Image 1 (cartoon, helix red, strand yellow):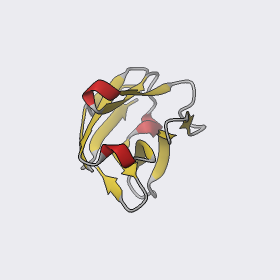
Image 2 (tube, helix red, strand yellow):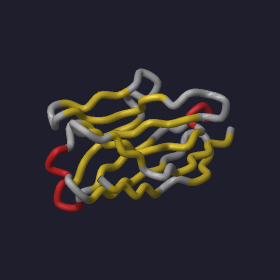
Image 3 (cartoon, one colour):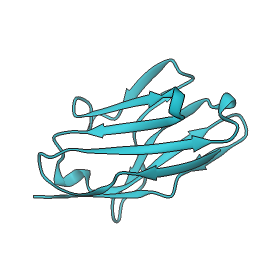
Image 4 (cartoon, helix red, strand yellow):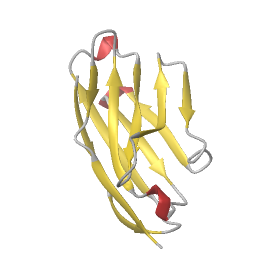
Length: 114
């Protein structure tokens, strides 16, 4: 599956951004699609996503502020990020997994200034 992420940028604390990830390829076999992020000097961490189309999960650090949703007609997933904090600064990656693949988008930088 091919992934193309976009929507990052620089925003002040308290602001909002929306990330997009368009996907293509063997999309019928997707078991998980979502977002991870990696801050400087830290490991990549889960942010939000949906498994097998059942339910959406969020990390505790973003719950209540971020919303993950999918537009099936456009083969695109989104991450609406509100009430952004400086600690949300990271490179955000979309990720899709199936039985025999684990694909990543190119990453998009989100910088939140205090």
